[in-house]
Length: 265
Image (tube, rainbow, N blue to C red; front, side, top):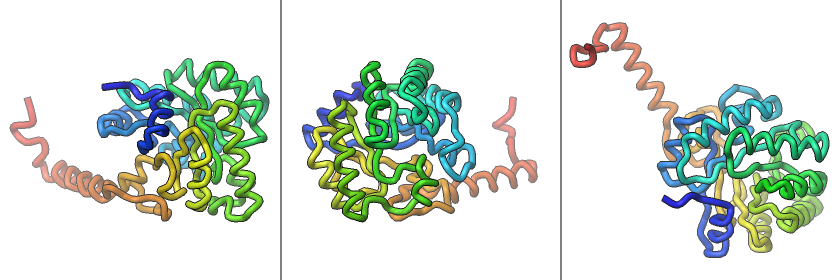
């Protein structure tokens, strides 16, 4: 079993191989995703929503991201683990950005960090890369800017914003990001960016003509009945299967049929 590294990403782009990425936030899920063969596991700041019930990603802290990421790293044998830098961990200053990136890498054991934003954070991202930390960029819909955008609508539909996204993508590649996530933008724009860059472009809600795909693991597994954007495909319906299993367990406990004679000492 060969460990996936940033060099693997580069080679997959060169060879035209698609990259698969899913999110995980705990040991058990990460082990299952890794066993399933995904190339990368993203410890997303979406843990704020998925694991902690917040309506945005903004409340999660560096300490919480390290907690989730270290659990994932302990479970993973093959996939490249990438950790989101949460809101407030890099925006304040370049020095603060490097300090928090170093903490995340040192205390979690992850292989890379992911940072939202373009030209505004050029210096911050460059400094993190100069510190020896691999960085994945993130453009398009950047959930940490939800209040600035006024929601989670598709981004870069207009010419000016699309041009800025292309400029930011080229900049991120030029300063040394080894991959780029593009979220919720027109598929034709994502295709154009992917074809123009030497680094892999991983899409979420960005069509099929990019170098890879990422989804929230719980969304892909159908664990959330209330969230179904167009770009999510449910490969299972675990919400129903889990609640049915819990119901059977509950009924058998109350009926006294669990545990059976074979299930006791």
